[in-house]
View (cartoon, rainbow, N blue to C red):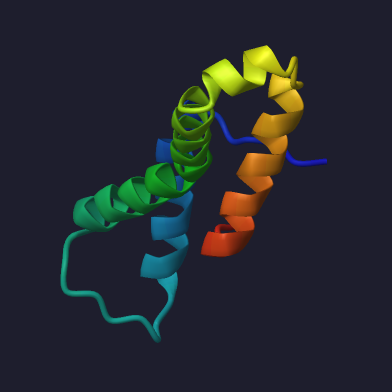
Length: 95
């Protein structure tokens, strides 16, 4: 089962990651902990939004075929899932 992480959890998770990184003796960082946390949050949010971006692109693709989908009484949800899977596979996106 895949669980999407709520965006409200990102700062908490970023803080935990940064805390663990800063406790490692092997890691030498050249920015403040706050900057590290900001970068970690930014990266995590970008990854969480990957699926949203794919979904929006699929909607746009299917919108261009809206007339044909209605005319042939095609299953929009099924087409959505197939198109999404194809885009994810073609672009090697991890969701």
